[in-house]
Image (cartoon, rainbow, N blue to C red; front, top):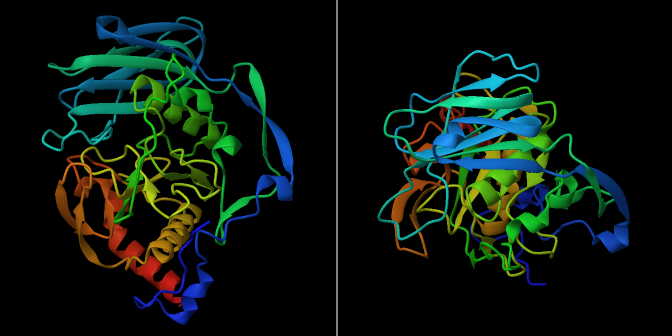
Length: 365
């Protein structure tokens, strides 16, 4: 397996050995043993058009995914409880500008959101005037019949940074495939150029983040028809790091064996060569937990070491698929690429300090 050395002539100090290369992953599962875990099978009901505005399901609805084209403001949801009563209307906070790259001439106009529903019987939606292409999906990743999968008995690592594999959070790999057995969006790989920070704009205080990630996976892969989850990595409030976009079975998440990065779907028009990390939650007027912030720092430091990035550099990104360019910081926020509130005003304001912290982790200070 070809892997690049951590210590680079490009100026990483000797202290950078504190952030080992990604190639220093844990041994293969066969060598370290496996254990069996049971994960609830995802149940979902997707509805389009006018019918998507009022939906009932024959299973407890734990999450509702909604997407539409048009205005971002003015959408709301009201849950229908199991006893038939209705909750209060609450505003939807969409995350926008995700999806495949396309030709780069028309950035995505679609918006999408995932909201927890707490086992509701159904829901009603209010969407802004002019909304088209409406789709809503009732999702249950908690209560369905479970399936047994084998996962590594010991934590997998990116250097010294532990992460949870796709199998570990319960990814159903069949969701990446169409009914005829062909892969919906086969992996493509390009050299990494930059890294982008997101928030999922979901609930804070999440008690079951793996279930939430399974819900995002279904929303992105199936309802949005991307073929996989949109991010390369996700981080929960406890600081646990989760493997995102599928990149093969070589044990090095987000990369192929030559060190190129798999293309994901987190910044439409600017995906290829752009690594996306999402923190679970909403950080518009509150900060991530200390554990999540620390894990974000260490993950970005490990990735910077692997690719020889200067975390505090300004760069010109060039999408190898469509030639679209953008002048950004090496560590940017989603709103630096497209019109969106992501990664939240508070988290976005912390990015200069984050860049400095990642640089300090690289230098061992």
